[in-house]
Image (cartoon, rainbow, N blue to C red):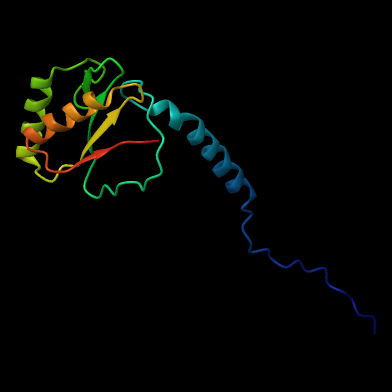
Length: 138
């Protein structure tokens, strides 16, 4: 008797993941290119320092910036690029701390800003009720 070999095909139950990897890599490249463009605020050259990043568990910190000329900026509302007076900054900090006393406060001081300008801002923040103030570095 002659045996016949059956050309029975086995089903392939594997998923081809190569297209998914390609799409993932393209999305990664898109996010890497667009992420630096999303930085908001005033253009400030930060000083370099070796430090650990601050853990922000609850929400976004309040950042007050000092530029090279000594102007103050706060990352609130629509007019983040408009300089604020010391009184306006103090009033906004008091208002924020009355709602959230544990709000994280950070100071972004330009590398060219004088030490006195940064210290005056920190004193202003302390007078408005901020107990802990951090410094932003690169």
